[in-house]
Length: 326
Image 1 (tube, rainbow, N blue to C red):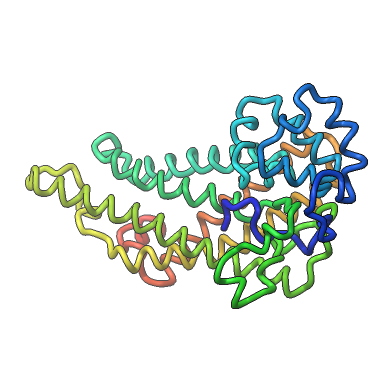
Image 2 (cartoon, helix red, strand yellow):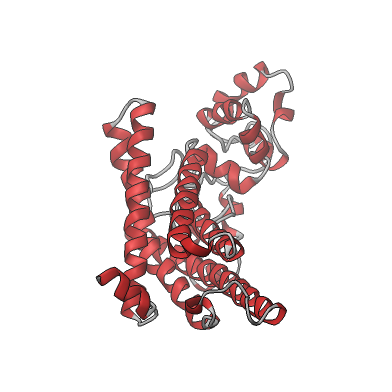
């Protein structure tokens, strides 16, 4: 899953070499052990599952050091307790920054859009706007989190990924995005595994988008119903919002949009950041600015394409079409 850090993002059995018998038997223990000895708490400095991987020599020194560095900040220290977040932060320490950019952009653009849409009645309809904002932020979070690269140190754990991998064994080692670089200690991804990343993430995003949209639309419809019952003459809902949306149709459309359009766009963004921007911009400050500009452009493009999708399937309100054309 997107939140599962020990998931199937490894290209192969990297670093395991079949040695799980005990401390010092893996290929990386000889380089890691002096550094561990220099820590005041030794291996006790690390959580249980990660500690086992280190002791078995499955974790390269650079990732052990990176873990210690990430522990220095209270927020990353808190998140590093979760295996899903820990393995993603070890693969990409800038993940929190990217999530922050995406959520920040999402709040600004969505609030602006809701305000423009409801301008004369924004205060009265702020609950509708809040429901739509929550739906959008859940989607934004997962669109960044799912394609983010993940380190897998223990190939045995990577195989424990449930029924889908029993039916499709190659899913055990698909990357988190089609353009992901091969992490240290992992075998290269095959073309089929890379293409599999599109399908796997697409299926996840379809489910997430459908569920998030269902909650958002159902909440909006519920608010419309409650307002109408409490005060039929002055419910605070404008005429163009007074009819309930088709929950199933809207949810399936949004899920399909996320699984296809958003999935491909965000995998491309992850690839551009990892393979192009990180090489062109050596300075962290310049890389931050370039990444922010890329994600803002992607968000803007996505909003335009969503409107076009609504128009294509006939779900864009006629009044709104006429306003935009005039």
